[in-house]
Length: 203
Image 1 (cartoon, rainbow, N blue to C red):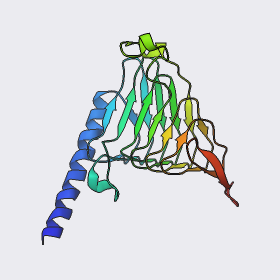
Image 2 (image 1 turned 30 degrees about the vertical axis):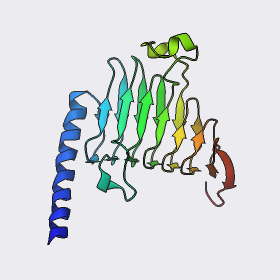
Image 3 (image 1 turned 135 degrees about the horizontal axis):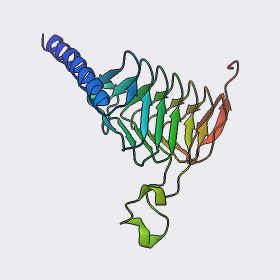
């Protein structure tokens, strides 16, 4: 009986978080497609003069029970500067990942972002020591577009750094740091991530 009650409670919570998330996105003038589902409340923040677009059938997981290995934090989708763009394609699943853009982050269709993945197009802080702590202008920081193509799976706790392209169908191993581009149709893992296997029979 207790188990049934918990399941019912989670079902209601999922419906509520979906309704509130859709309303929040509309209030921020964020474009999103049909059938968006939010399990728990994500953090979505659009800087003035920037844009965030989310495709159809997106699933945004921000609750501990939404993933069997748990989340460190809620899903974060945030533009940090005027003119920044975040594009998320159709049928994308995000589990407590962080996506931040100063320039452009593009995520293709049918992409899976595992628990606590971090994706950005910026270093967040200047390299020079005297500017690191107090520089409040994100445009003064090194940046480069980050692109994740269709059907990519990024494993739990992986970090995708600025200027990287991950080719279609590729898999990034859990805990990897992707510091350079990964070709299509392969498995890459490690620190830094390197190709360890090519996927056969995949177009």
